[in-house]
Amino acid sequence: MSEERRKVLVVGGTGYLGQHLLQELAGKPYDVAFTYHSATNAPASLLQALLPSPPRAFRLDLQTGEGLDLIADALGPVSCSSI
Image (cartoon, rainbow, N blue to C red; front, side):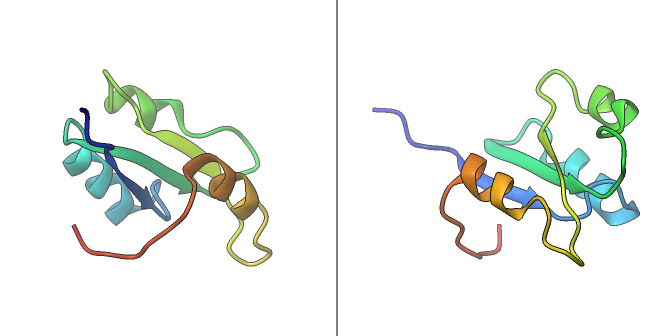
């Protein structure tokens, strides 16, 4: 019986700290996703650097909340905890 991988969402994954968190989480046994705020797609260079299994990227506007529904639908229930 396989145990479900814990989900980790890095809010602001394209920022300085977020990019370092994503690099640290790469290859760990987590289902990793991150948010970015841009009118375009997620930065390809960041996704490329995190191969072979790049995290899922979600566009999110923290001021309006635009994108929160998509994240909730994709990741399911959220619980806050430290890793």
